[in-house]
Length: 373
Image (cartoon, rainbow, N blue to C red; front, side):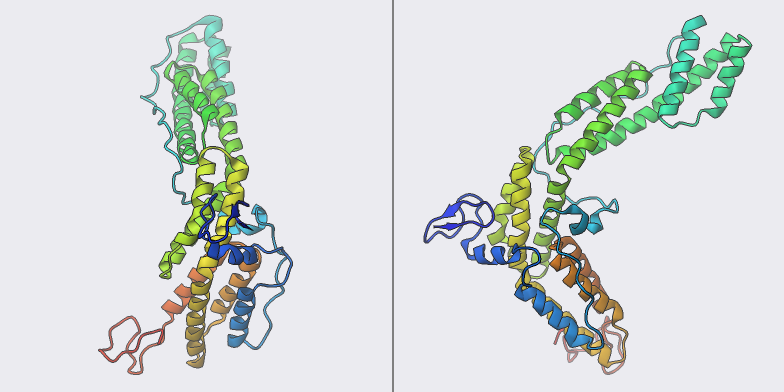
């Protein structure tokens, strides 16, 4: 019996995959190596990347690597995803749709006396809490109150109502979009209740009630986003690796078991199980990606050597190579793939012209050699 490095289930002798997460048994050793203890000896692929860098630039050693980050350390592993870029996630579940707004409520009935003044104060307070600039309307309210001009006060209050309900409707759509994105991955029952209550409050023109519900739903969705952020980023990371394996002509199937099991766990709100499986799925996918990735880096290295021999400037490419090594030490596969794609684009943009001076992106006849030859 041998323990699966992804889920810990025991695989019997002769098994081809883990019965728990369906990771191919042939990847067990590679996953253990990729997920080795932080700060330990560099795996072979890290030493290979270091040799590739030194084979191009012998003028200076690569910079000291930063400390290795833990598997679920978001601060160091996913710097590229802190800038507000959307996560490209595949849905894990089919959420029940929530109703959109049917339109703004009708203007409230005319009021007078203390009720009109109470409504004016309620709306002005709501405007402040929503950070809506009501300066001109607030001045009109104060002037009408000072002169006891209830007709002017009622007009100003109605205009404020229109402003506030418009803002609240926009914010409802914002929070509904956040809920719809999140609910494709994890259940959002509390947020759904608050959004329904917010929609109802807007429908009946209850400004204060709508504001209260808006603040509740913001907090609830924010809490859910923070709670599930690690799992969502790990899922996006794994999907990016699957895409890259296929781009390089590989087959991710042997490593897809832990990814799909982690996706299911995420969809059923089993956060710890999902994070554990998705973190190991990333290492399994790297075990499949690594040989093709290193082969591609060698191809790009040869292109850079050719460029340098022709007098080209390759320092930006060396920066990307070093970034690849640093991100791999951090086990940040998102950063590694981003740096690789920038390196590839640099090499493609600077492809040498043929001997006859024809630009590389134009045909030069049947005898033109392949760029990777």
